[in-house]
Length: 212
Image 1 (cartoon, rainbow, N blue to C red):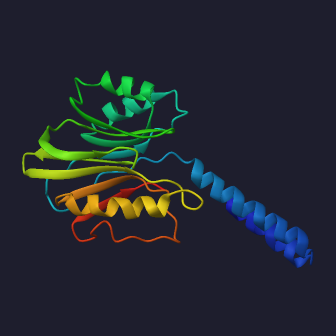
Image 2 (cartoon, one colour):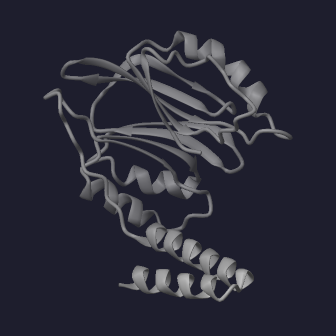
Image 3 (spheres, rainbow, N blue to C red):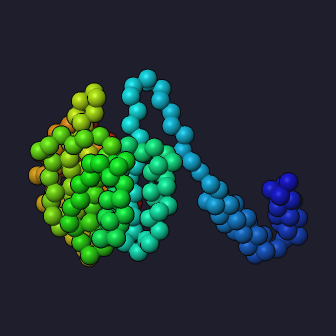
């Protein structure tokens, strides 16, 4: 009904020949509609059309300013997440994740930058000694032992593009990507920019669960 009313108002204003008012009202309707859509709560529904085993995986940048990690922990439990990758993990965040060792006994953390570190937590055991922490380069990976076999999980945090080290960071990490066995999941905050591309991750045997 609201949409119909707005449409009638637009038609009336247009017929009156007031183009400026018409454009302003149209802009308000567009912005209002977009905002309404953004504010709608959304929860994705898992769909398994192949019958294969499903792993509940979560990728999340914790935000170094975030002091409410309890909400993240509650979501992990509510959704029964099995493997998760994090970025911007502060010392307090790490302490909080450590309290979940009973549910996520396998955790790997790696030093990155002032905004925080990177981490992987899992209900499945790590296939030691496979894995690597590339300190201060924003990458940590490990092999996770599933019932069906091993899976490489990568947590990646890239710098902002120019004037920061985004492109050179990717170039330095390409050799590391080449050593990570398949199949693999590459997840993280990529701070993606269309100006830069890289073939570091093989599209045929990896799954990209990136952030920005």
